Amino acid sequence: MNSSTYCVAQLNMNLVPDQILDYSRANGVEVLLLQEVPTSGNRLVGFDYSAVRTVLSCKEGSARAAIVVLNQDIEVVALQGLSDRHFAVASLRKRHGQAVVFVSAYFKYSIQTHIFTARLGGILDRIDQDVVIGADVNAHSPQWFSRPGNNTGSARGTHVESLIAEKHLTVHNQPGRLVTYEGHGMGSSNIDVTLTRGGSLVNSVSEWDVLDITDSDHRTIRFKIRIGSGPEGPALGKRRFNTRKANWDRFRWVLAQKVLGDPETMVAGAMSSLVP
Image (cartoon, rainbow, N blue to C red; front, side, top):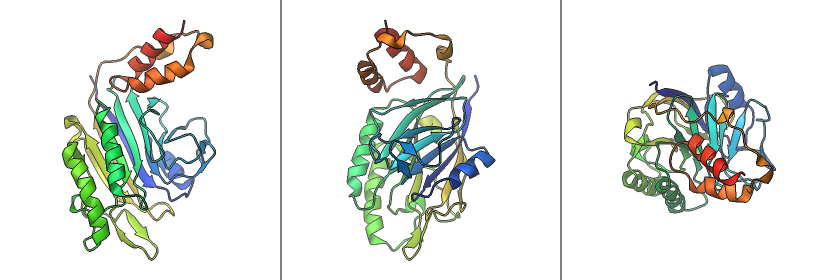
């Protein structure tokens, strides 16, 4: 069986639309992990295209994180039961490959870091799959090669370091790259982190780099990640359901609870049990 490789970019957009999408389309990026996203109501500004699928961290118009999938061959299940204003969570799968959960996380500077690490830890506790995390942690640490000298950032970093150790996460940031943040009058350092959980993902990231390609004060991280193969799930596209009598509130609840396992099986199982 074949493994699946995803081309991923992560970026704190700083509310700047469009540029990252143009770059991604021109350079084969399949998945975007975005923070500080520009929204209007329940939509992601600048991403209104039929070929683009977006998972916002919440639907109340206050989302601060999003996952954008550009490859139509990737199956997407939004895990809204695990998402909130600052965390977007989705299970993705390529054909013949195994499912992997992607998380886009925004640790807002004005909120204490331990609140976000506790929240992310709770999300990870409810997922029994490999996980890929793109996060603006607003914190400094030698683990992701931050520049020394910022005591506040380093204090915040200890909370993130504790989460990494407790949840057995791997940091994939590389030395010798551009810093991920360059704020006007705010200094510069590495505060954006690429993390994974799962033994098979420890050495799975390649071509990790930092690119200066948008007007955001954060730079874009781009990498490829190889996901181990798994058994092919049922072909959802060939199954038909009579949805007119569906209990959608019940369906959403069941789907949110069935975070474990393959996303196709989750959807098919929920539909079969709830739709007459």
